[in-house]
Amino acid sequence: MAFVYSGAGSLDYSPCRYGMSKLIFRGPKQALDRPYTVVLGGTETYGKFVAQPYPSVLAQKTDRLVVNLGYVNAGPDAYLNDPGTLAIAAASEVAIVQLIGAANVSNRFYTVHPRRNDRFVMATPWLRSLFPEVDFTEFHFTGHLVQTLHHVSPKRFALVAAELRAVWLDRMRQLLGRLSGKVVLLWMADQPPPPAAPEPEPSARPLLVDAKMIAELRSAADAYVEYVISLAAATEPVTRKVFDPLEEPAALDTPGPLAHVEAAAALEAALKLLMPAK
Image (tube, helix red, strand yellow):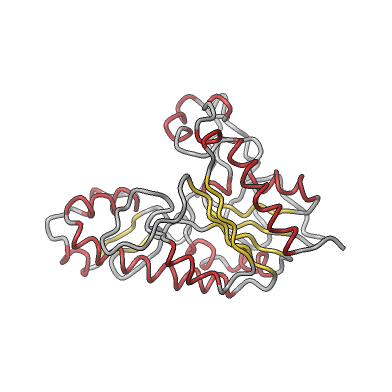
């Protein structure tokens, strides 16, 4: 069972479903009765705490039908496990795919919830033997898990990170392979993609995604947009976001309205090259 908390001062995200999908997306729901663009991604794409997320801004800028299929804390598994969403994405004229973190995938070391991919479900015997001193009953979220494992042993964590990266690349290739129209990859973060490192730190987001991984995916896409949040957007007052007081800690950690406007502008430029006006 899923629900959307709407306390005093919080946004009404108009939650909706499309077709046979089990995922709940941000509304208002769009009628898919003409050529459309879809946007797949995580919390940034969903647009937590902003009145106009970048898919909505992009629709206004381009006069296109843009369907926001962003899902909070999604990994590629959320989409690959949902045939209804895949069918809608496959039928799109253009699919914009946000590059999301590599920790939210089921792998040989641990499993995640099939839809809420940031939820840690279970450690496998491989992970338990690699980290015998860790009590895995204490973890509920993948972010907490990977940061703790890195703190306990950066060297052993490097083995987990290598697995996560390999699985993420495989799942992303599967996802991109299910898309029939034009594909745009989107990097949206407060720094450029980091170089590959033998002992990565799970700090910068998207977690454990580096430039080498993106380079390996670019051949499966028609365009790549690298949007780095500007200083002006990074220092935008939190008061420009919309949230209940209880949501403030989470709101401080998400892009604000200006970042979404900037991301939409970067995507608009790419779409003009990819889909010339008729």
